[in-house]
Amino acid sequence: MKKVALTLSVLALGLAACETQTEEAVENDMENTEAAVEDMADNAMEATENAMDAMAAEADETAAEVEGAVEGETEAEAQAD
Image 1 (tube, helix red, strand yellow):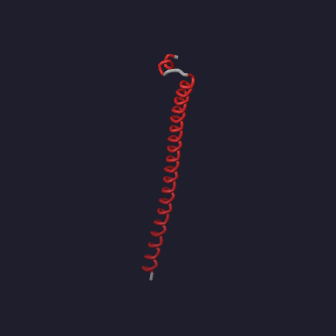
Image 2: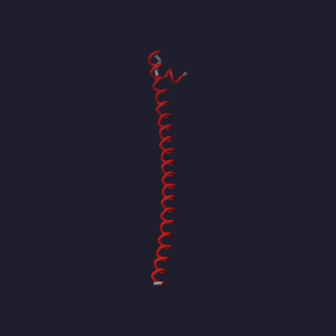
Image 3: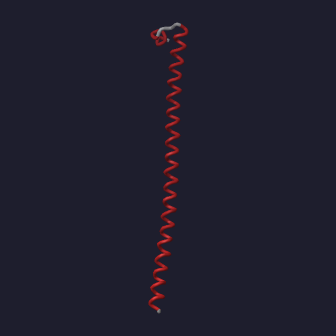
């Protein structure tokens, strides 16, 4: 009977140790996932800002071309200014 009790105690301790390790692994996975999501959000924001800057530069260039055409300037005249 003592052997059975000892065996059950050892098994219970082993299971408790596994459960603690599992909880720690889940917590680590959650932290890693949160960090990865934050990095992806930062990268997406940076890419969006870069795209907006490029579109603004293209819009400025197009506006200058249209303004030059409206004023009747040739491209050579516009570059000379």
